[in-house]
Length: 405
Image (cartoon, rainbow, N blue to C red; front, side):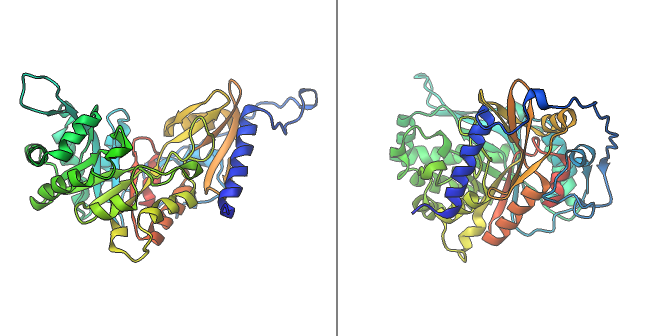
């Protein structure tokens, strides 16, 4: 039998599809619409560091108003996190705002992961090397120092753990790692040398999203475990990016409880990608709260297991702008500009625990974007599940979001 919340969510998504494509039109006909004079709202924006948190400013509410977001989103409280749980913040070169957030709010994050590096296979017959690290030109040692110093000011140590993604690997190249202990040792030594030469505190490894075939699922722990063991034995942190164990429609994921149990003794944390439940093709909320809970329970059903603390529940700081033609992703400043221009009525969907609104621009559109309230619900969920948090990614969010972490 289909669980009640999933059946309700299915009906909700069906309504969203009809709404976006225009088949469910509850507006007045053109002949009955009254012409309204444009209302000029007075906007009093605040910005920079403030002395009160978003909670003290009474901004964490499900009754969200567009004007409050536009006026208040740049104001933040510069303080250290009070949470003892791990909080991993990703930073990407293509959203530079994240670099500034990490400097200002470094003390709120236990780990910061700049998305700089790629591990690419080398197929040149004239070289003994089997791979190369690219992206080193993006490494900014001055910025790393600033982030660490920011954390020290509030008596916290923030670890720098850049993400490295296995990019462009074929099934045969992964299989070679599975079959060759010598290659695994070489990979571990190369990653160790990278960490030491760049003065990192560890690495975030992204492998599973790049696997070209499910046939590798059972054997990949035998690759990751010895590599991670080598890095951890030298005193460095290893975080593994993992996809959700279940997708929309009960589709099984690529990383299941079996792999989680096999790798838990070998890595420090698992960065769970518990977002992108809906898509441009299947409009709806990005990460329903009940689904995020299921993502955790699928890989570690034991509430009291110490391995729960190794899971970093993924929170998206971007949204999706759905339209009848597909739409696209929306980032913080784009979201604010849409609010400023269209002044929509923001609604709260209590099934998914997300805010959304509708507006018209080249057709009817529906935007789901995180709010202080929706993020707070996910922070509370992580606490109740005994997990940490990962944020993808801080350059996409609004400045006042980080008061919550």
